[in-house]
Length: 196
Ligand SMILES: Cc1cc2nc3c(=O)[nH]c(=O)nc-3n(C[C@H](O)[C@H](O)[C@H](O)COP(=O)(O)O)c2cc1C
Image (cartoon, rainbow, N blue to C red; front, side, top):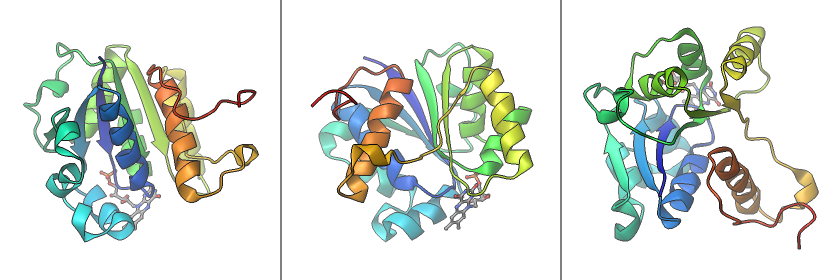
């Protein structure tokens, strides 16, 4: 089973983090979770009061799934994932704010989430970033290009209308299935193009 670091930063799209953790833990994978300080506000605005602290966010999963989720405080640099000697298979920042994107692209590891992404880069492990902003300015684009050239996968949460999603949830599930592909997790949770 894989060990995946999931960082949630303060961009819009926090439900994607929840859906991804649900999928990973349901599939039996282990999640090392970090929620940035500012993400608590976006979670509050988008998901409601009952999710709006890291502890409440984790509590929203079933007991069985919670057993596979390890929550880290965003300031805890003594956490195992802050070190390259600790093995994890991939790191995903979902959603990724422009602030966190800029920090990662310049090596500014000033919270655990940014440090874990820095570790993934230095150890040449899979790093997937889900940047959410519109429109992108030149700084955002330059940061994405820089990180892509370093091997990170830049995966903005852009819908695919050709899949004819019938609801927001279906569209989000499609994104999650593509995200799992990028994390190297084999799971056919949605039909693929050309498949029924
Ligand atoms: C409701 C709300 C929505 C936001 N959406 C975005 C967004 O989509 N993208 C972004 O880059 N920042 C967004 N922000 C701003 C970030 O939260 C802010 O830059 C924050 O400092 C990011 O910190 P973090 O990357 O450490 O989590 C939003 C803020 C709020 C309150």
